[in-house]
Length: 136
Image (cartoon, rainbow, N blue to C red; front, side, top):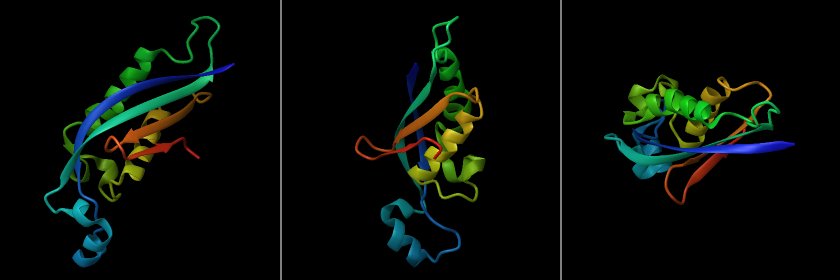
């Protein structure tokens, strides 16, 4: 029997959507206000959902405190109150779109989890705009 355990987290971060190899005009046309050279920020909401078999000894799929600690060390400490373009190495050459951010978060968390556990990450950039990634 598989069960999904979810943990919600939050971080604030600034970013700018642009490609270094494009002209200013093309960046403006594609990314609009999100291409502001002075950056802009979001209050991101994150839901990490781990699915797996219930351990017969503990009754857990994953200890929620362990999941909380992974999110804190891998995501909140790395992204919170940071400029994603300038302060987060994963985005040095990767445009920090919501789609790319959710994949980076997934990869960082998945590397910490037991192999047999499945992971889905939902990232809210605004209350109405969100992305999901489950590694497929």
